Length: 162
Ligand SMILES: [Zn+2]
Image: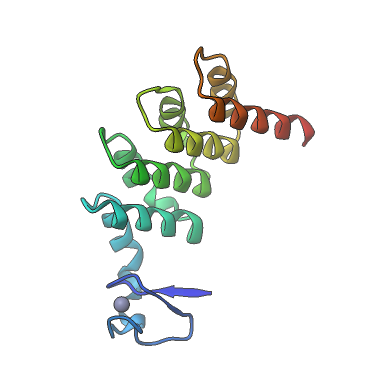
């Protein structure tokens, strides 16, 4: 287990009581940790916003972050890294209500390919009828980038074999 510093977000040992990077007391600030991470999804610095999204999704599966993630996903133009991290986080949280926004991202040829690939994985992870339909619809798009077509093929094969 890792404990993230709520102040500087350095990774610390779970048993740590002080942040090794900035000296912040870890325990007393921890109650605000999720709220601060959710605020940081809207951070203007892309690295911060992407890291906050990643922690909330991959580490915490934090359902309270979904509104802020959806708001960030709607921001255009945006950093490719942020859009990708936000799409991944929504998949890791398993947010059903994110399906329309993820489907729109997947189908939008103006948005960066890594973010659209993340949308494929997120929709496959969330599952359900609407997510499956979005994946099927996307596969019929003309001029679909090769990597995207392959990712869509992979999700469809997995669906059939499970
Ligand atoms: Zn720190």
